Length: 303
Figure 1 (spheres, one colour):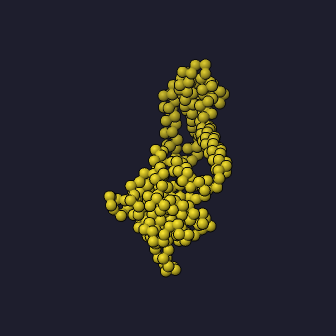
Figure 2 (figure 1 turned 120 degrees about the vertical axis):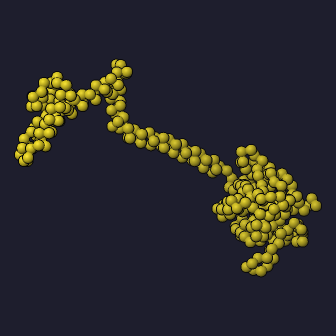
Figure 3 (figure 1 turned 60 degrees about the vertical axis):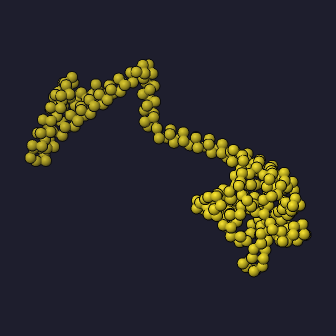
């Protein structure tokens, strides 16, 4: 027992082995006397006794806590000391440890993602430049069970070897019923977003989707495909429409349903008519025209 605790017991006139019950009784008696004093001087008189009792009771509380802690750690045997230090460390630095672990995990995951991204960029840099981005919009689906378009892109290149690399995407837009020309609103909204965000060079779509988009609006003029006479201007497969700005009739699409190109593509579809067109007027227009002219010309030659 330390010297300060001995003096506290002596101050209140109690032996060091007195029971806690007796200490509590004497402390309660002191509090009653303190409250019964009339003046401030009388109330402050037993202050030293009050502090002595408080110190004794606090010491007993600490002792009981220590004994309980020792009993709890007894299960660790000789390692109880280490267990106590570890628990104390975790109490003090638990938040820091958790935050540090999270930071390490984030850095590891982030570093791996950066490495994978770098590897992917390195792979893309090794590829030839993209000749065209082709979007299939309508009731189309790839035959790949994982939904990947790799085989579809290879099939396009196989049919048109002038190109070395294309990027293909499928935007599924089913009709609400057989023979219906209406679509599910959710799919329509997604299609609009995909068109606006990706802006493909070539658009391949079914008849119902073409009607929904609105015919000529937004498509590039394809009259160059009939300029050399390979395809007759009155060919029934050609889609003509009036340009609202110029007022002139323009060729905006070609039906390629029966072309060897479509037959060779690993696509699932039940479309009666498949139309191809280009979007806008860009620097790749001549290259895109040549592509359409070739695959549409093969279809005309078959007829």
